[in-house]
Image (cartoon, rainbow, N blue to C red; front, side, top):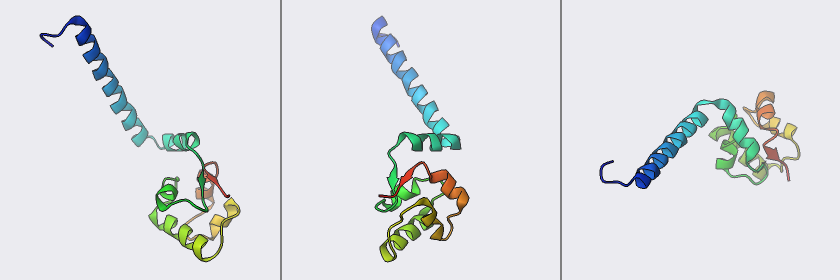
Amino acid sequence: MVGLTRQERIVVLFLMAMALVGIGASGLFKISPGFKELNLTLQRKININNATADELISLPGIGPKSAARIIEYRQSQREFRELADLKKIKGICNRTLEKIKDAVVFE
């Protein structure tokens, strides 16, 4: 850092430190499964009856196949009225319902 003033060196060091903190935090969110559930509580709730496939996949325990089945069911049968209605979807069990119960709404 030759040729920089003291104030410029402080700014550069601060920016480098913030970048390292950001990289560390993003790695922590990817590693720890508990952070996904924490993140869901901070986000808005997902309406099962009009959610896109990507929104459904963002729910814990819901993959691309389950998301497609949810969308297909609500288009061909009827809208979901409560959490238990999702048990009609192949691949969705009580454990999955427990994971998503606080992240979904039925409007």
